[in-house]
Amino acid sequence: MTTRTRFAPSPTGYLHIGGARTALFSWLHARKHGGVFILRIEDTDLERSTTESVNAILEGMAWLGLEYDEGPFYQTHRFDRYKEVIQQLLDEGKAYRCYCSRERLDKLREEQMARKEKPRYDGQCRNRTDHPEGEPYVIRFRNPQEGEVVVDDLVRGRVVFSNSELDDLIIARSDGTPTYNLTVVVDDLEMNVTHVVRGDDHLNNTPRQINILRALGHEPPHYAHVPMILGADGKRLSKRHGAVSVMQYREEGYLPEALLNYLVRLGWSHGDQEVFSVDEMIELFDIRDVNKAPSTFNPDKLLWLNQQYIIHSDPAHVAHHLSWHMGRLGVDPAEGPDLVEVVKAQRERSKTLVEMAANSVFFYRDFETYDEKAARKNLKAAAVEPLRMLRERLADTEWQPEPIHQTVLGVAEALELKLGKVAQPLRVAVAGGPISPPIDVTLHLLGREKTLARIDRALEWIAQRTA
Image (cartoon, rainbow, N blue to C red):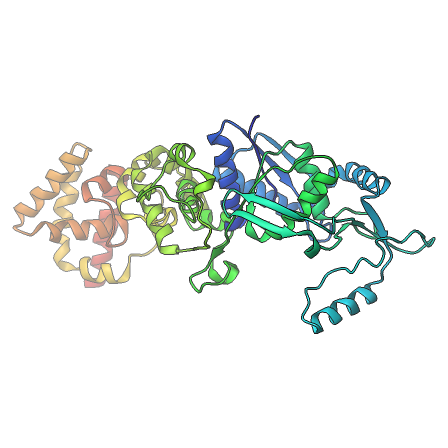
């Protein structure tokens, strides 16, 4: 049987970190077993579901590279089919109309809680035969009252639920719209889903869904309920812990592979290995090896991983993602040095693409002001002679890193200065600040024309302040 998994987010917000990890685990399981990965948008919450949220989910999946084989399917497009299944359950006596008012149900809940009982529907309408005309009603599933439901969970192991603890859940609201536990069962059944990978907050829904599946004459798929992700304070990861939207990590300069690598290690491991390519993830991942205990989100570890990916990934791949950040700074990467070469020059000193982009703008656009501290230290009267000699000699230097390096070295030797007394004023002159790649690489990428023009500008700046 072909393995078929699904990711089924609700479009009531962005694609968050927890959802992305669930999608990743489901995607990896399908890819490892040569299966099919399905994207299903569970948009039956008509009040909260938005087109913007759908787009945010699709954008997040695309950026992460979690390509789906089927879908996206939308539950709102399948309402007619859900109504057919609900009617089938009614006709077979496996569901019934419940006319209980909200006031009665609220009072029932209060009384049960006062007795320290688990709030649950008491079956008032379970055996009701009359159907008052014009009275509003919901439809409830007639859950078995005896026996138990056994879930052989791929992560948590064997979990047993007593049917006597499960009440008759609502499968259709008073306006006729189906509820989550009904739609997910019908979709998993008709999309031939073999493995359901989802957060363990859904575990209590599982026995209910299994009972509905069996009422429809089918056995359930395999379930894998993955533990939640916690913040450093031990509480469930949320907005207060910082960036939890997948696309926020793009904005902060993370590579998608670094985020995937970090997410796969939240609850899963393979020996002591920390860095995994996507192909290695597919090869080594086993859903049964996911830990039962919650994982703690560590931003510092993610930042470290991102730096590893920036350093060791194909520079062309990094440049592809860096280009977007350059554009956000108003820079056209086509109007300057090859962005791939910029990545090679900057990758050892960049933890994020935001940092790399900010430190690379000077290659493409003249800066308005010098870094104040760097200029005060380096662009002073003592720098005039070295800068003038550099300007003269660089005008005739072959424009490659090694000849440029020899020219800078020659000026230092001619003036009997330490290399830093020549290279650092030059760096501030051409880059505007104290940090750049090695000076020969910096000048080579910048180009002769811009280099000479910026030396002239620095000499003029010094002259104005020492006059």
